[in-house]
Every structure is written in structure tokens, then in C-alpha cells.
Amino acid sequence: MKVYLRLSNQNASAGGKKQRIKGFDKLDCLRNLATEFGADNITIIADSLSETFKQQIETLKPFHHSNDTPNVPNLNLRVIHVEYGNGAATYRHAYNLAIEENKDYDNVYLVEDDFLHRPGSKKAMIEALDKWEQYTTCYDHPDKYLNAVNGGNPHIKDDGEITRVMRTDNYHWKITNSTVMTFAAKVGRLKLDFPTHEEFSKDTITDSYRMFMALNEKGIGCVSSIPGLSSHLETAWLSPGYDWQNFDYFQDLPKTKLTGATKEIISQGSANPKNDDIFVGGM
View (cartoon, rainbow, N blue to C red):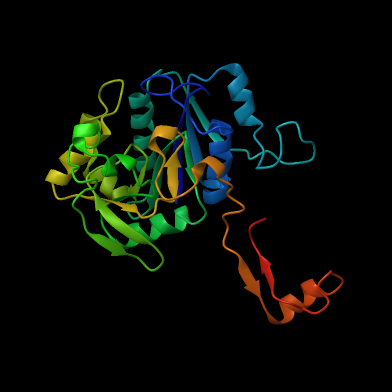
């Protein structure tokens, strides 16, 4: 899965200043993205970055290493610098690039710069895209549980949306009426829906709700994982059902029980001479 990230300066955000999870910033989101999806799969559309932020991106190192740590390779991310000054133009650039560089059956992920992803996000979206011809997201948007009269999604009442729950091999999904401009799709799907994406990104700010409603009217849906495996950093709109305030990608990794020869090798010379159950993961 190829990833196309739209990146703006550290404190920039659409719609003004927002309260984000304490202790996380866009560099953390980028490290997390590289960990889950692989640095070699990521292309960054970097819009009007300051010289300082450009340098931080170019010298970015993996989690648990500062950019000044010696003898640790940089992530060497592919960065395309642009000077658009607005999110819609950056979105159109990423969208067009995803179409130009990939085949119709390839999976691509268009993502904003302030999202965190739990382990399994990539696997989950691939499962969904391989099963259904639609858009998919791991962001379980909390506006789907906020009544329209209280400022939530226009189609929400009684604290939820009318939907259908489905499953792939390893994950559960629900049909959702819309999501934000962070989603995955097959390239062929993007090509077919190009006019709709163009229509709702023609101004300086994209209109994700109206875009997905227009797609719905054409019979093209979107599914989101439940619970959400990714989340916006903004504290007002965190995916429900998980403690994002204390997110730790490595602690969240599934633990795997080792048996047989592998367990024997690890236990030798360790503080586990009885060869008791050994688990790896959750570093």
C-alpha cells in the first residue's frame, strides 16, 4: 500500500488552532506512519514548510531516537515540496500523484498529517479493499455518535447512524455515510470518481462530508473499522473505545507466545531457566 501524506507546518491546521493530544505532534505522527506502513511506501506532499521544519523532516529518525542521535539512519522519506498554502490544492496534488504512479488494482492511502495509527491499520484496510469496492478508513469518527441537533453529523439521531456491520478475516466494519479526507481506496476507484473529488476540492478547503454524500448517491460507500484503529490528534474528535491520550504503538503490538526450539534458544542464558512461557511484543 502506497501512502500519500499531506504535510503542513507543525502548528498549521485547517479551521484554526485545535487542541491536540498532549505529547504528540506531526513528527510523532510521521514516525508512527513510517512504522506501520514502511518509510519506503510514503510520499510526502509538503506545503510551504519553514526551513526549520524542512530540516526536521529531512533528518527524521525512527521512534525513540532524536534527530541528533548519531549512527542511526534517517528515515529518508520521499518529500515533494510545494507552495500552495492551502489544503485543497495539496489534496489534489496527492490524489493526482496516487493515480499517476500506481496501477488500477493498487491500494493507496491518502492521509492528513495529524493522525495516529495502531498496529494492524495497514492490514485492516487492505483486507477491506480486497473485499469491497469502496472507500475505507480506520478512523471511527465520533461525529457518528453525536446527534445532529447537538452539532454532530447531519444524519445522526439517537446517538448513532443507521448502518450494517460486516467483517473481514480479522476485523469488523460498519458502513458509514462519510469520513474525513483520510481514507484508502483502489486506484481504479479514484479514477472513476475523479470528477467528484475535483468538485469538492476546488476551493481552498476540501468538503469531505458533501463529497462522500455525493458518492453515496452514486452507490459508492465507505466503511470504517470498529473499533477505530486510527485517530485524529484533535482531542475533541478522537476515535472512541481506545485511550489515545496514552497511545504507545509498541505497547499496543500483539504479544506472541513462543514455543519449541525458539523458546529454548531464548531461555538459555536468561533469567528463565525453567523455560516458562515466553512472550514477545509490547516492547
